[in-house]
Length: 108
Image (cartoon, rainbow, N blue to C red; front, side):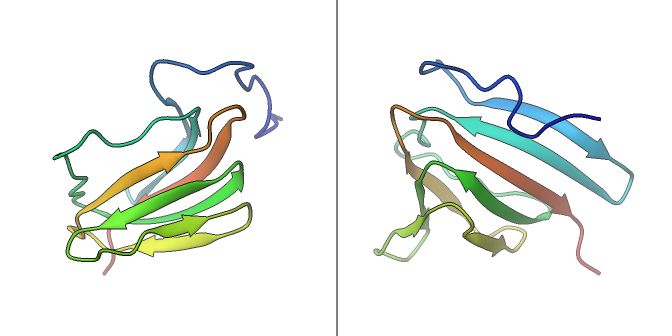
């Protein structure tokens, strides 16, 4: 047994911490811990698979290509990001870890 909130960093890290919790040939489930990271300017995520994620702690904002408004997330908020929907992490909260659960899968 493990705990999703175990071993959280007490200070900002240089990069996000990503733990693969479960993986099959159909999906992967990851814990992502952000401590102030954001997608660098001009870079976009353009994933081959769909992603469903939920923010468990902290706060963050996502930006989708072609949309000027940020989507701000607080604990408990979840979102579906279709494959090839270009997006960025605009910001994550400084001073406390933002813990995400991210499910990556191929929609049929």
